[in-house]
Amino acid sequence: METSVTVKELVTTLDIEILHGAEFEKRPIVSSEVSRPGLVLTGYKDFYPHERIQLIGRTEISYINSKTAEERIEIFKMLCHKDTPAIVISRGIEVPAELIPLTEVLGIPILGSRSKTSRVLANITNFLEGKLAERLSKHGVFVEVFGMGVLLVGSSGVGKSETALELIQRGHRLISDDRVDLYMIDELTLIGEAPEILQNLLEIRGLGIIDVMSLYGVAAIRRSKKLEVIIDLVIDDGTVEYDRLGSKKEFEQVFEVQVPKIRIPVKTGRNLAAIVESAAMNFRANSMGYNATDAFNKKLDRLIMQNREE
Image (cartoon, rainbow, N blue to C red):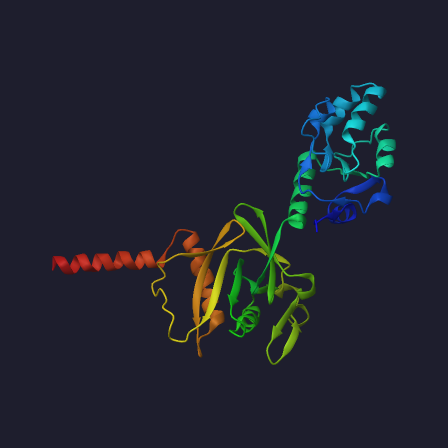
């Protein structure tokens, strides 16, 4: 089933209003790309993406106004198509009179914004990319730790939700428990958010479901966050070997993004919340160019050289 967004959702979220055709507010938008139809207005129709929102700014309106009424009608006939979701006019420009009857026949709403064209383009594109992007549902608990998006994964019962609860009590924020929806907004960036039914909720074994926002306030939750690191909580049964120095880098591919992954052994007596905090801060330090393992290796090399000289 094709994902879509309605025109009503678009105008409700952004600083855009329906100027004409309010009865067509449920018209679906299926493409996250926005077209500025400059070439189409001049008569070049090859490769015209009529299934996209058409954005008209000052440049396009200036060209249109230079034409006669009959020429403007022909131009708008090329612009309007039965699957064009909407036409947006920026900068508070008045809607050309010749455009209105054509859009009414095809059921195309005309939208308006007072913002400059480039800003309208960016806002619509960002909104649609978030709504229409392909999504992947992944099991885990997604939290914000020191401003970083951290996804806790591991087998059922390993303690992910309990660790998240302690992190919340330490001042960090919950994004999603049990399941997180991930989508890619560019080649390097993944965004995670909670499914609507799970927003603000956390399940603790033996206690049940708690509403984090009700118990800890709005500062304890966040709607979405960039995924920066995955922490895999693995039950330590004595059979798994770990890189004690942390020199090996591990990644997990989600869509086309390589996400850094850290494996942490879980056993009785370990304070997982404190370890997750340290892992997040250490990852941030590595991202800023400081690596404790490299620093240790340099010190070790110096010590070996000193012993050789002696």
